[in-house]
Amino acid sequence: DAGVIQSPRHEVTEMGQEVTLRCKPISGHDYLFWYRQTMMRGLELLIYFNNNVPIDDSGMPEDRFSAKMPNASFSTLKIQPSEPRDSAVYFCASALGRRDTQYFGPGTRLTVL
Amino acid sequence: AQTVTQSQPEMSVQEAETVTLSCTYDTSESNYYLFWYKQPPSRQMILVIRQEAYKQQNATENRFSVNFQKAAKSFSLKISDSQLGDTAMYFCAFYIQGAQKLVFGQGTRLTINP
Image (cartoon, rainbow over all chains, first blue to last red; front, side, top):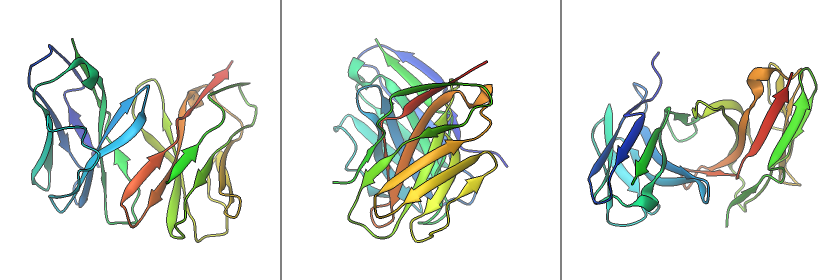
């Protein structure tokens, strides 16, 4: 079975540009999570969805960040406008049920110049 | 506050040795799960092992085992017969079921030397 798929793997953009990160969860999983990893703050949960509905977005840093899940097999995390401090690795993870292990995608390394 | 502490920022051992990574956590919850994830240079977060807090028996996965001390809120990872491919960052995490949230430690960078 395919794992969690993320694209792109690397993204380099300039400050002020819009950035869209994509995630395809493991088929059949009903929970989807977006994390950000930085040296300073480690791994932080940004937002999670259950059955395509956003449940907790308290980790989203500010209004420049938004996430959607239009269907069970696709989610996006958008940053508009991007800033250099958004540079990080962004992970998507999915799980089946509340007690299941979260399985992570390979991550997207974002660099904002 | 729910926190996870990994007190060893870096460790280094020789191939085939046994190494133990430490993790302590703080929570007032009674229903939770504990994990060790591995992050090699490829950046992928890979599940190593999982422990349910209600289970007294320590989890084991091949060369990986845990020492779960619930009263002490300690969850260490033992790697036996270490291999070069075990070189990675190791993250301890616990999962609060009610909050649907994984809380991670800061990680331990483990290097296996030939």
